Image (tube, rainbow, N blue to C red; front, side, top):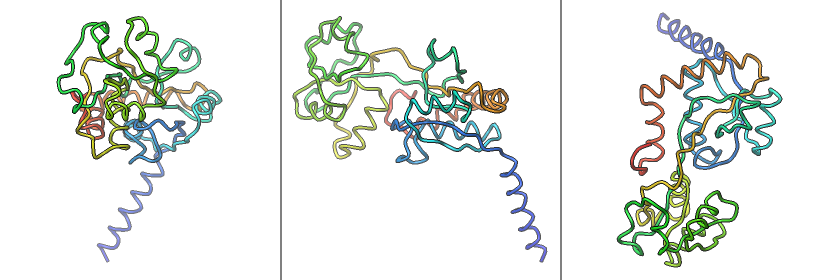
Length: 254
């Protein structure tokens, strides 16, 4: 009987604690491997977000939307924050941003069987003029490649670019590190170890953050609570551990 009473007390206490944690509405969209309903625990960024809010004393409900609708949801105060977003001067006029949960950087991927001696590093893109490099329309790097007069070939998308590397029709393909690793793993897992990337980054690290509403109820307090949680997670290595668990092949660890 005593054991039964203790069990009932423990269950009621757990329910009370869960009820004491308010649920915060968040907005996001499909952007694997950072965020996706198809990934375990919604992807690496979502895992970081959930842990930060949990430490701050909140449960979260993720609303998957198009990116314009996600932005509209926080503008109108229907969600406390949207993620992942990069801070810009334009966005900072109407939203507030958390500290970065992680950073994203672009690298040049290659296929090892066709490039057994890749350039381990480069000081200028001019050094890559002898290579055939994939591009996709609308990407930020096109003006940069044109400026350095690189030999580029238009591809349909990132997967097409990786296939062209594999066929030997191209030498290098630019992608964000996490996106490149994800595309290789998800589309050609049997050849995963045959791809590599040059460790010299193409661009500066891009901070990926929570973009907070200014109209959501008690958002100021929520933002401060989450800021303290993120600071703790940075100090105790939680953010790094979540990243490495999702991207063990990313070297050096980021």
